[in-house]
View 1 (cartoon, rainbow, N blue to C red):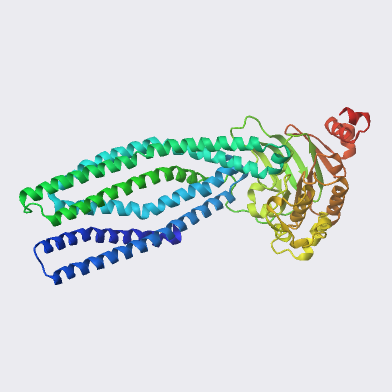
View 2 (view 1 turned 90 degrees about the vertical axis):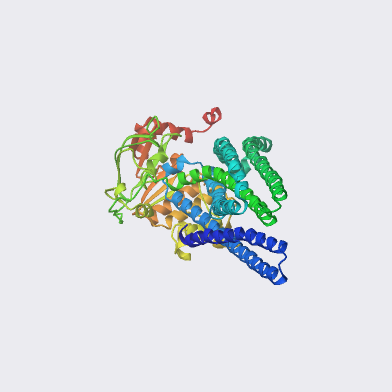
Length: 574
């Protein structure tokens, strides 16, 4: 609640005052009826009328202010909840993120928070008003109606039993439906992100059917839950009419038979009003129970995100300065989760000097990306030690380490905004000159200068209005602006031609000679001028050496090189 705590406390107080006044009004009205019956004068009637007007105005005022404070408190509570969830996700390690689907996190921050927000508003308003109204109206009904009020005690267990049964049946359905909501959102997300692929393969009909199936599944479960919840209304109406029939019949009989001595018209009007109050309170309480049932499962899903602790944390006394770009792997083995059956990396031993250019090559699934993700602590080694600048990476402050290790991932990620705004992810206060220099090194200036707005050109979400090669070059320029001690290019030049690839590598050799450069590539041409090349195979290092050494000594490297450089009949056979 934080800054909305005061509003959350004020609302129940205002609601309590509103309820007290509403319960006094029928009592005053009953006295007025009796006064009129007794033949009182106009002054007495005006006095009672004035009191009723004042009470009605105060009730309206307290109710209106409570409505405003409850809305502000609930919306603020939801805002803080989304903020805490988002901050929690930002602190997640890759291992934590692997536990939650992206679509599930989005559903939790939107639909689930909205459910909890609505429940919270009801909790500080209706859930306070209804029990208080029930208690005060019940007490006043006994004061005004005597034995006749016992009918309410007979009705409450019937309603309570019905509510418990409804909740027991619907809770598992709501739990199941939220999981299906995640699947539905996943279908939408995949379709929108892959729209170009869907259209190029003319798969719109297939995607529509897939979405329709998911939507029907959600609809079926919700319909089943709503069908059960629908019993709540008829049960409430039944109890209400039973009470009304009893009050009208028994009340009228008592008035007639006792000639108003045991039970008069004023009491009769008051107990009718209190009957409505009690039954409306019970109906509102049933709505609260329904909302709490729905919000209960949403709350659990939200708590799962907020209470999830990052598997990567700072040490007690972290080191904030990275000495240099040297890297060391000492008997390192790694798997993505404790449940994984095999290691992604096994027994890695490797020494990289600061300023070296290292190429990494290997077949698909050889764990090239897994190797480099241990350097900036995107994951922690399962066994062994990874060192940067001579220190175990687990001894560094996470932000300090990652600021000195720039990673250009295989998949180019750009954000909606201008080219300048995207580049400044690498350095917040980068000048125009610094950005221009980084873009020259990444060969991105060629296409930027051709754009009408240049560096102020707008980049759509995900860089949808740029080609693959343009996105990769912008991502490289963004990483270069960090001026890191270690630069990792994870197959990040795959979408550029070999000539541009060579120019980028030449620029990096000349302008950042002290930076350790690790280049993961599928093409041997991208790594053959590296100081050393690492050949990966099934999570192990199969060979290390220069291009010439590996051609002569390493069968895997030689096979890759020959397959990429042979021509003529061999190419046709392939």
